[in-house]
Image (cartoon, rainbow, N blue to C red; front, side):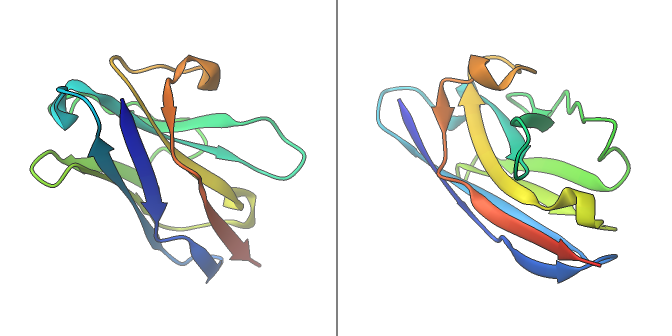
Length: 125
């Protein structure tokens, strides 16, 4: 069991940057390193979608085509934290961003077993 808490969302102009953080609290004997971590997002009226993920030791790092080259996922296993650096933001990136965890990298949202509460990112044009 793991509890996830996101932070770092906010309002930003198009072209700007934001850095999201997700802090994990471990409730069992598992280590943070034993979890693959991911960011997913849900825009108003749309289904939740995969954004990026990161393996146990920092690779692989698959990205959705829509964010490739603009977003960077990383993790600090010593601090039980995963990050999403977002640059060149566009209005279409507006969504609630969720941190998720599972033993393996998943691409379908329903396959993740642990979720944070989400953090709102709004990009104005």
